[in-house]
Image (cartoon, rainbow, N blue to C red):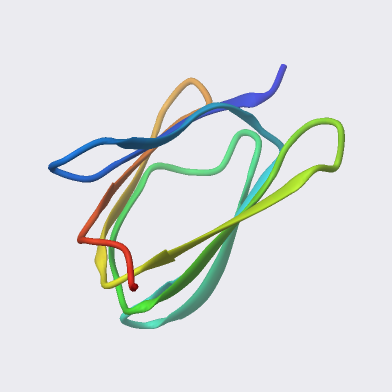
Length: 85
């Protein structure tokens, strides 16, 4: 069972799908989220989010900041501020 991830801005959906790993920079340091991670709510700083899909395909999304929420049941949501141009 893989983690379900959604990455959203006010304007659009940046990513929806399965992920094996999420790497993001928070206000307290870099975190790696794996399956069955404990619930977490953290502020994201300007950086790139790395999403590793089940087939090891990597997606990188540059963001200005936002919030990461890891929910029970292998669900994660990222509410991102506008992407860096």
